[in-house]
Image 1 (tube, rainbow, N blue to C red):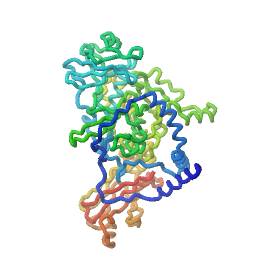
Image 2: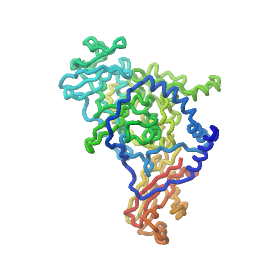
Image 3: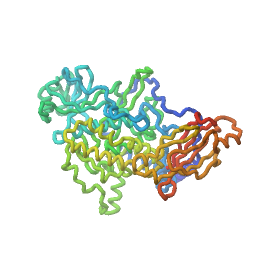
Image 4: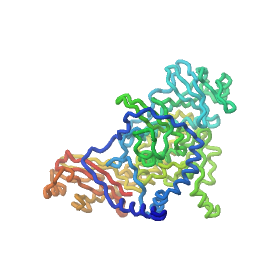
Length: 578
């Protein structure tokens, strides 16, 4: 096959595949991906931040353009004849099963305010009843600090805010950690702590780097770090304490490909729903540094099964919200890659006359609230949000993936956000109020943008009351206040074996009565047909949402099993049009 024929063939095959619908069965819906089987100890992958930046900034950008499949898919999406490759690890309900990567939490199982505030924490931070023994310096990342063992023998990484931007990095890390945990990701425990520097003790293994060479840490080295830090009236210093996670770290994990020495790693990372959908959550949090360098693979010993397997963490949230670790975020971050061929091309074509929305922003130079840095909601555009460095999983994200992430973002209520932000222990109430307000505004922008591109009905379930079988669901746009319930109707078509049983069934609430006292079109279908097996009793209902006088929106197909007994009806599949 010649080079020209390959992309054409790819587009043709994509069209054929898009015509076929899913086949759903009565098999239990997959809620857990068994990727925790026992595996031999993997080798540690050494982190190389310079290579990570160079690879995603230059080599990956060139490689993907030369990939004919990638180019053909881009052309197909531009011509609106290809929707993009679907995520490979979703279940029949178009959701992400629990796994070594992800656990469904706040969206499906709402957490209390107290649980949101606790997040992944199992302690209140390092124990201060005894000395903190410094075991090593901190040489990675932009913040100063060191690793300590507390009086109970627990290990923590201690990080300090930049003197000019006190509270900025530590607040961002605590808030984003708790949000990412509630969203379903594995993250370390991060807490804000105030401690007396007299509690610090230099251990025998503690070293610093001088002239590119490691040497033992001295009292003078410690004083040079601690003496430069602001203190409260009681002499205590603010620090971010990040607790070591259980298990053996075995390096980073990438947003593309698979790990060769992990037999459980069966899905290419760029095609995992939880990594693609992370784009929506990262855009909300202004998490522009979400790349391989800020991940951690941990060889974990499961206390229940006894299996040893790799668990996947997101780490280092100090470059989120308005913080870029030791300085505020620059306005460019979140709007384009550090070196972005797209925007460079446009600037050349327009001879530099095209003004970027953020181009003359200066809020990062002298932020109103140094404890926040640069975090805004007016310029922010969820659909045009980009991390600082290319992230393959984000680039592969489809509307379905982005919608999945957006509904998780919208699961955080105003009270949820206030509760989480309070854990940052910010000293300025006005700064805290601004941060809460901006998080709410960006949250709503994320929801409005992606809910407008998909039909935002969700959480389908059967309810039986007074012998009425009802398919109930949530209209997330109405729940969020983006649309009025009075202006919303739901246009339904019920099918069996591709034949319509009921058309133009219009309801004005997210509740569809399908059978009453064993009477209705479903029951008529069961009575008139001879079914060979139970799977033939799977029905389909196509639901479109109509706002005011507009035409019906994109559809959601709900496949359900109905054997003639209301109590046994259940949803077996979901398919969303994008």
